[in-house]
Length: 249
Ligand SMILES: NC(=O)c1ccc[n+]([C@@H]2O[C@H](COP(=O)([O-])OP(=O)(O)OC[C@H]3O[C@@H](n4cnc5c(N)ncnc54)[C@H](OP(=O)(O)O)[C@@H]3O)[C@@H](O)[C@H]2O)c1
Image (cartoon, rainbow, N blue to C red; front, side, top):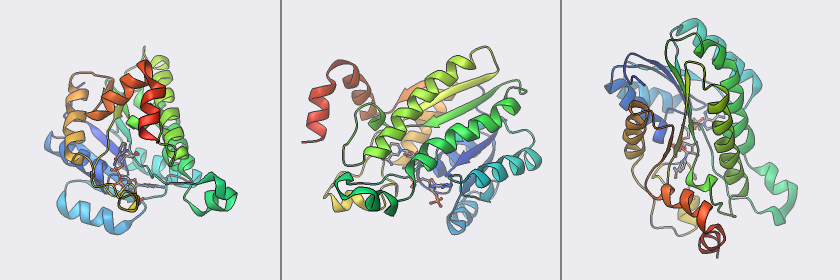
């Protein structure tokens, strides 16, 4: 698809992969809107990229999603690309029961329900554009889970499945459905749990994912596994048990 002249909404665009994507879209001549809960992160992003528009919102809430949609279609009428990027990742020990689960943000609402609902809100609008796209950011962990973060991996596997179905449903429309599958990326996603787990490898720079995403869009590569995520995707089809064992010993 054309990677310039679009109006692009990136959820969770104030930090990490979303912010790097915002930067790449701006460089290529697109209008960019980013959203997130923390006003200061959006302000910092706007200082870096003065051309962008920002919106404070919580897309884990039905009201937040509805308000975001209403605001975007009234203030940015040309919207034609939705990037479902916002996400959180939590380690959850189910042996500790419901209190432990309730202690964390709801990953199902943030990572999965928001992408499904925002897609439903925007698709009729996107279908009226000459060319448009939904870009879902999943994870290599959609294909082989890390059992210490069971809900995160389940949301990403579900978002992969949703992306496949959506692409099929929309195949005769102007809406292209892309899935970007990052490997471990050096961002604040884990809120420090990699350090807790003594992980010295923090992942590839988020800019690498953003650059690969722009190339995938330009070449109509609808499913892009970046770096080591490709290995996980392939292993899920050829030697799932062995790879799962290696990752979860
Ligand atoms: N980093 C990795 O290793 C990795 C690997 C594979 C896939 N991914 C995926 O890449 C995407 C981006 O993550 P990242 O690595 O760039 O981490 P990140 O820097 O933490 O970005 C996540 C963004 O989502 C926003 N967000 C979270 N909850 C939200 C909510 N309820 N409403 C609105 N915005 C919300 C956060 O902003 P606020 O907190 O201000 O709301 C933040 O800007 C995620 O979907 C993640 O699962 C990351």
